[in-house]
Amino acid sequence: MAATLFKIASSFFWTLSGLLLLLGLLGAPFALYARYRRKYGQSPAFQLSWSESYKGAPFRESEQHVKQRLEVTGSAEYGAKLGFFLGILGFLWTPIVLVGGWAGFMPMVTVGLPGLVVSWSVFFAARSFLKNGPAAVPLMRSAALAEIAVNLWVVVLVALCTGYESIFTETQRRALAHVLLTRESDMTMYTLFYSLRRGGVLTVAYVAVSFLHAALLLRSLSPLERARELQTREA
Image (tube, rainbow, N blue to C red; front, top):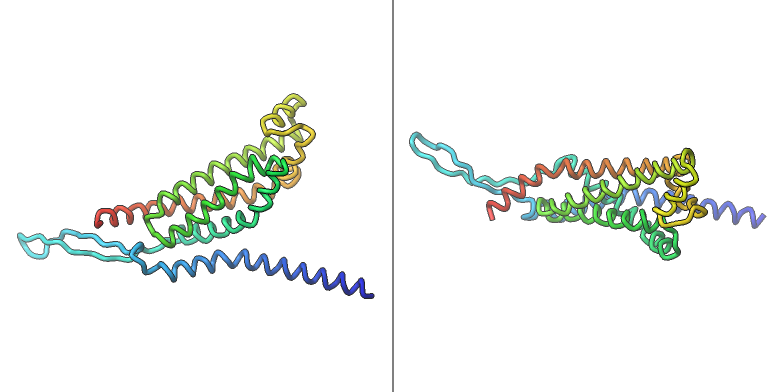
């Protein structure tokens, strides 16, 4: 009886912990966005000012000084929130990737480490945007391009691992294992996560979310670049 109650209590505890972790993971990006907008939304970083010429009267031209707050576009807002989400996931994976790489689990080296760098980059790009406004454009562009590059590599890896389990010849399998810095007998380390016959579907879903985030970042750059030019001109 006592053992049964312990199992029930243990199951309840881990289920509740998992739900709380999931809620925290989903809610944290919104909380961070609200915090940074509240703290820095009225700062000079989001203040735009410029002069415009106008004809105030016949034969006379003067200048009008214009001040305006920078409006955060929808793509920039959702890009920041999704960047926080992906960054938090990266922080959670950091110990696993580092330990796995140190233990010789090669996917953690060839994919995990570049992925960590990108996840940290998109997190701090979101933070920099909400703190520094248009001045964060270079970091945002670099993070988006790095995100695209790493996820293209993951897409290629998914295709290769799927082919490894379906259509590749023995010679091609050996060559692929060599390229991926492992032995053919250890290729399960890759196919388990990147073959569409196994866990590759989840990997592709994550890649799709990352591509969406990169697209949001790139889409938000144009208005931010124009605002940055105005700030530079005024300075």
